[in-house]
Length: 221
Image (cartoon, rainbow, N blue to C red; front, side, top):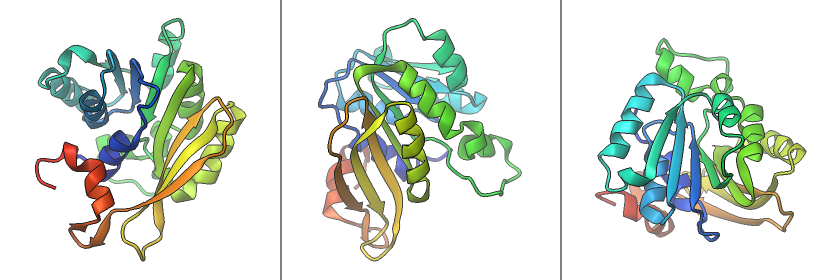
């Protein structure tokens, strides 16, 4: 599976202000978010969870071949299985996810891609419940989701005492509608900080803000 803009965005945007030492990447795919966080932080332990066989193998290979292999580990499991098994372990300071989000009644003939990209592979309810269960008291839960899913996602999050603390609206161009939102949630109730990020000025011409955010993770930018 190709590396998507969403994964790079959320990996680059996630705050490391609380200096997380224990990070969890839910639904890691090829492992790009975990790798970005390994590059950005001094976290001693970065764990990832992936249910798809091929993606798990690719993420494991990518971890082993990276400069941070000693800090990265991928589990082959669903998030529900993982949360059950890890319930007695040390909680995570940062939990991050670029979850599957296609809710339309449309599927391809590629089962692996469908599993990775459709919400029925990991419903928001499961994701939020597990994140709330595994997160430390001062931890942050960070996700990127479609704008149209924001209200429902935040509603479920509030039910599990996870409150919005920071938000970034993501637009393709200045004139295009907001398609994605990046959300940071935690157990403390604070006034959320909201910003907007525009990716392109025009096709393949990126805004200075986007370049500044992601330049450390591309060979050419």
